[in-house]
Every structure is written in C-alpha cells, then in structure tokens.
Image 1 (cartoon, rainbow, N blue to C red):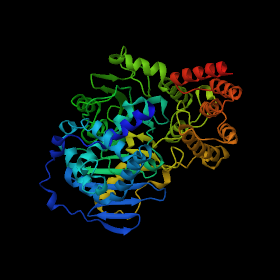
Image 2: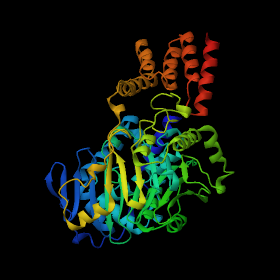
Image 3: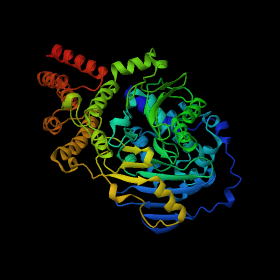
Image 4: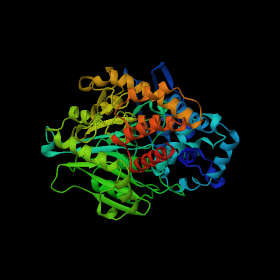
Length: 551
C-alpha cells in the first residue's frame, strides 16, 4: 500500500489532465517581443539583458530576473534551462525506477489523468503566464506525459501531494520565530528547515532567486529549477513566508498550489493583514501552516489553511512562535485529522524539541539559530540516531534558512542538508547592485557567511553516509526477497547504533531467514529506541509477537 500511494503521488505531478485543461493557455500576446537567447559568459555564468544567473563557490545558483509576468517566466526559463532539465530528469528518473513497466506507467497515468483537470481555473493569470514562459524551455521528451505548459503547472502541485499522502513521507518541516527580549538585538528573527525530500538528485541543484516584478514587491526565495512558487522567501518590505505541512486527506481535485499562495503573499503583501487577505481568497487543496513574519508588525503569525477551514494563530504575552506539522489555532482544535497528527506522528515531538531548544538559547542570533536548525538529538538531548524524523535536523532537508526581516537579511544553507555553510544576502544591497548593472559574480555578503558544521568532517557523518547506501541496498533486497549477507545486517546497526530503524531492518532480515531468536533481539532493541511514529511502534510490537509465536 505504501508503494502504491507513493507511485500515485508521483504520477499526480505528471498526469496528463483532460483535454479541456490542455486547451487552456494564458495571455501570451507579448511573447514575440521578448529576447530569449541567453549569453554564456562561462560554465557558471549566464546573462539575458539585465537578467543574470551565476553559480557561487558553494554550488548555489544565484538568479536575478525582472519584468512583467511573462518576461519573468521567459528569462527564468532561458537562464535556468539546464537546472529545469536536471529537475525533470530527477523526477522522471524516480518514476521509471519505481515503475519499470511502461504499460503500468501508462495505466497509472490514465488513472489520475482527471486529477489536475481544473487546476488552471484556480491559478492567478500572472502565474500562469510566468509558468508558460518557463515551460518554453522544458524537455521535449516528456511531452508524452503532458504538454510542457501543463506539465510545469502540475509540477507546482508536487509539494501539496507530498503533504497529502502520509505514506509518501516527503515532509516534516520545523520552524520558529523570536523577537523582543528573545533575540540579541530585540529584532524579529525566523528560522526553518524545509524537510522536503524527493531524492538526492532533486536536492543537489539549489537556487536563490531574486525577483523584481513590474507589479508588486521585490522578493527573494530559495528554490530549484522550474519552480516559481515559494517555499521559503522574504520580500523588500520585510515580509517572510515559510510553509509547513498539515495533515490532509488525499485530494480528489487540484486547486491552487500552496506554493503559489505563499508566492502571492511575498509579491503582494507588505504586512500581516495583507498576507491574511491574500490567503483567505485562495482555494487550496491541502492543509498547510504558512508562517508569516513582518518587519512592520514586528512579529510572526501562522496562517492555517485547508480546503474547508481557515485559522489564524498568534501568541499572546510571548516573544516566540513554534511550528511543526500540526495546527494550533482554535479553528482546528476539534479537527480529527489534526488531532490524529498530534497523537500519531512525529510533529508534536519536534514541536516540543524546538520549544526546548529555543527556550534554552540565550538571546538568539543568526548563528545560534543555525545551531538549532542543525540539532540532531531528541528531547533532553537524547541520542535518537541520525536520520530520525523526530530530530529537528533529520539529515535530509532540502535547505535550512534564517531571516532577519527588519534588516532585510537572509542566511540559507548550501549542501549538504543544513550542514553546509549558511550563505548571507542583504536584499537591499542585492537589488541595488542588479538594478545598477554592477554584478559580475556572486552577490553574497561574504563577511557574514556562517561556516559549515564540523560534523561534516566527523566519523559519525561518514558512517551515516555509508548507512544510507547500505540501507537502500538492504531495503531493495528485502523488497525483492533476495538473500542478504548477515554481516550486512550487523553492519547496518553498527553504522547508526541509536536509530531504531537499523534494528528494525535487521530484525526483518533475521525473521525472513527463520532466525526468530535474533529477530526478537533486534525488534526489542528497536523498541528501546525512539521510534518515529505510533503506527511504526505498533507495527514493531506486532512483529515481535509474531517472532515469539514462530520461535
């Protein structure tokens, strides 16, 4: 069932849509007037008029684009076409890996072809124009799944589908905000980990985009090729957005992707009230917490949206706000899915751990915020194993990011995970440099870069990387009922000794091999550790009972 849901979710993103949706096309009357031929200055530097793409020494691409919606899309697509191709290949490669049968892929494609059929009715015209511009540079070989424009439009629903499908387990984000006497200078400070994982290939090409639209505010967002929606960003008015998944039922119809709602807030809101009004008027198809920080309001709030409800949560008599993956406003107090998330998932645990870390920190700074985002332990500093989804740092995040809205400054992580250097940018300086045409390289504030974690040089990190490779091979062998060398089962546990999953997988191997005594030992060891969710713990307990009966 888990694999079926995962496949179902991936195909939601690339399904064809019905014929009527194919016929939808935004206003592209000005497309003939726009130059779309980029100039290649080097392998890491491209320009198109005043638009610019440069890869810095940390491997992060820095994009600047300006103009109306269609011009933004065309400039984005022309400059980042290699990154777009990388992301499309990463997604499609994952699908082909999971579903090697072409006939089965076609069957699943038809099964969900209706899902995205009305998305275009909910997406604002300006974003359809921008997506169309980007789509001009998509890979032709994937047109069999959907024409490029519709494919790129559906691409923006990937984040939502990952949230909706519990079994896909793509997300587990955690964020915080602090102000007044909780920060070193009293100014508003926000930090978050974006734990959206869709494979290593998806995560290895990161891009910080600086957008200067004809309508609305200038803004930045941390993103990837082909994506115009916002998952983490800040605008020139000091409004920030970060998104955290809530629990949703599997949607039956795609509407406005949440990343386009948060993008609209970035582009058109200058304070919290305007952000709320934008979110209220959009129809979404999953549940999401949008943390919005505002320099003007000197605080942060949560806008909690879902297909059938809407809530606002703000703290009273407090100078900090914590968010994981469940709702906190009164509107969701009796929501059954939200209560189930609190009870069964790892959201409440991470909420408590983030609260613990923020409370322990004396006067938060960007550096201390990064330390929190990199924390790999559980409550009370318990060792819970590397990669445990109960940790703030699960060692799988696409990125970590820290905002200082009143100074228009942002720090964002380079690879890997949140452990690479946090690169610093000053929005006022960045936009001034681009508008004056004085950019010949990176626009980082190099003196404010926060160094990479020492953990990357440790044996524990090398062991974890080795664990990931061995785990992948182990799971594949278990799925295919292939023989496994017992030495690999023991190695798995040695590489990540505090992680329950290592003992669970080893126990599975010994159970299938008929060594029920060792299976019992491993399942007991797994249960003595911090098991990620209640359903996983209950599953382990059932396996332990079955092992005793077999023995």
